[in-house]
Amino acid sequence: MTGRDSSQVREEICERRTILYKPLVDTSVAKLAGEQAKAKLFARLGIFKPKREQIQFVSLEKFYEPFIIINGAYSIDYIREETYTLEVAGDVREVTLFDRTIKLEPSEARGRRRTQRITLVGEERVTYEDKAQLVFDNKGDEVKLDQFPPGPSEENPDMILAELGEKIDTLKAPPVEEVEALRSRIVKRPQKIKRIISELFKVSERLLVYVPFYRAVYKNTESGEEKILKINGITCKIAS
Image 1 (cartoon, helix red, strand yellow):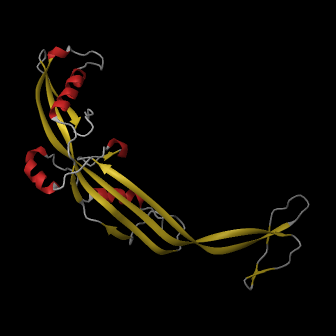
Image 2 (cartoon, rainbow, N blue to C red):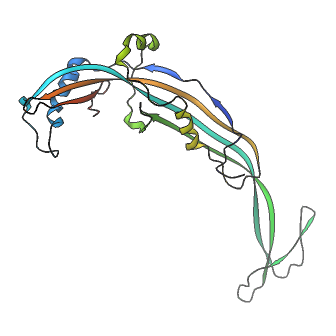
Image 3 (cartoon, rainbow, N blue to C red):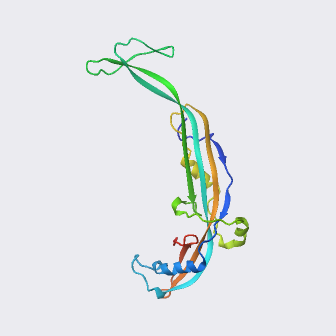
């Protein structure tokens, strides 16, 4: 039985819940944030920026982007076999442990002192645990947890999502992918397992979270080029 083998692991996987975050930034504040950052959109080499009056506001719309959060843990209680080597004085002729005579083996000489050793084989009961919380964007790419802002949620998300329609970005990651990602991250059996007492992979939380964003479109009146600013509807930070 290898440390990477995860066959026959008992699993408890909860159902996915949907959460819709309330926007904390209104359209006027989002537009102001866009106006302050618009010149950077058309900067060349990151330093040559056009004049602010060259950049014309075109449109601003609110949309929701889906993220997946999954939280879970893995634990295993198992027995492993271990070998113990004990040093014995050179003048000992016999060692008896647990009513059993142990064979003496010669050991390396230390100066003028001759030593011997005995080897014992025993079993150890060991518990190993690991846990993780993962966040994925709508493409299925992992996002750092500190980059995902918490926010207040709507009371009736399914009803509101149905009303929003096209303002919801489609979730591109398949439903099972986050479970597989979490499983591969934490379900790793230790080496030297003789037998397993208990083992469990448990997914305690699966969330589909829709986060509000604003999509601000600006046009460079000199070149005619249009670009988009993505503004977080909770933190008001420029997302892209």
